[in-house]
Length: 342
Image (cartoon, rainbow, N blue to C red; front, side):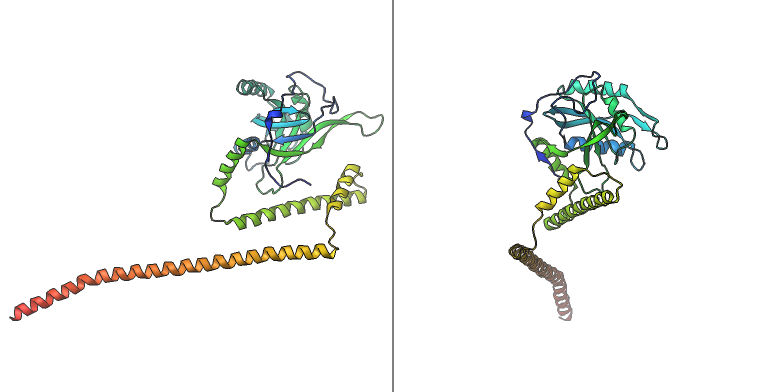
């Protein structure tokens, strides 16, 4: 299961540069003991991809492609920066596509002048799925790094799960005697940030969040989003198991092992002590929520009554001030009448 979107803080001091120069290199996924194991994407990359998509392909069926920059250490790819690349493809004919690799080389040379430690580690696409040309783009990026990673960054705002999906190219033999084919293998991906990046993201979210929404409402919305993402994953697991039973998909022992581990971690709700403990905990939480609602209502009514009293008081003082000139006028009129009579 993919975890809920979160930012993981880590210490970059242990990261050391482990990338190759821009020379042709073999694309074997199992070359050497330091095969890629996971990908860490920084928030700056996500913001850059969203900006690239909004400028180029918003409200269209097109996708955007760019280059990922960063470093690799002990099989972990740390993606810290990125830049867009001119890319076009024919939606009707997937074999027709264009990527300006001269622009790519010029941009990379300029980025090296600013951040010498950053190297090309792969490429990104707005997806949301793998396309036929991605393997060809992966071969093109093989000129700049030994083992490029492919990260699909989903820019759709209605998605509630982690927006990054990482892959690496591997060689597979379907049957003996047939040629070797390349395909993409999934890599675990997370969103990681340095302390300075966390501060920037918090300030950005502070401007986006609606101040009229209470903290309780935002927490409930987060819970709902997490449950919706869990429901999607369970539906995906169900579809896979049904396809395996129908014979349309082969059995993957690694997936079955992960599913069995998930089921083993589920609590046994048939135990009476666990059921009673959960009920007590739930009731305690509901009592706190109920009391909080009552206190909030009483405070709101008190403020309303106090505001009404102050308003009436100010209104009465204003009417008294208006009546004072009228009384003085009446007194003056009486005096004039008395003088005329005399």
